Image (tube, rainbow, N blue to C red; front, side):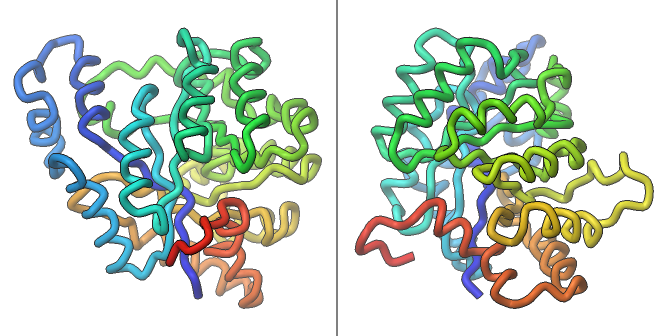
Length: 306
């Protein structure tokens, strides 16, 4: 079975530098990248192509053909673009945008023109409604770009790294309802819209959205701890309902892998693969979920090995 991962975070040097600047106590002013990583007990990303080379080795070890790499702070498009250029047969570039920031639409256009493929919005993190005209302009820019997709984080949002470092996280869940994407999906029917973590607690709403909008795709990534909010709900139940409503062609396997030395998060794959096997999902459908849908949404350039 061909295996692709639709959700991995690329924690670059710029990512750790941004975290260091967010510390109100100023603990990470000297050698910020190394100091933050030491505090977390993580490996620093290194210099040059060290991080992307390590990602390639991790994918090779687990026999993962391709993966989405997410630039996990606004303004870090170049880090992921460099990684994609280093291994275009292995990576698809996603990047975070804050539509409220000055020049957001221009950044989207430049990033997509530079080879990145997916615009990532985090409305709860940056505290805006998807109906905001500035968000609409960013979404329209994504819709106008050939081959681009939109990723919108909905539901519960916790950033474990910020929590571990004691950094403030002033997120607002009011802006995380998948239902807010309904009109957007209808307005841009040819734009693939990815809702990660199966709605991250808004599972019912994510299913409603997917049922009404055929361009909505659900990403299965992470350990899906939001299931604790639904009494007696199991991963098998989640996959059963997602398959019933969205079907196998609109589920995208992902792990939410991020840091080293852990690397690619194999237990997430094992749990999800076991769940679909327990359901008796046919092999062709499993192949779509764990690899085929990613290749369909993000076809490789001619000549890429993959």
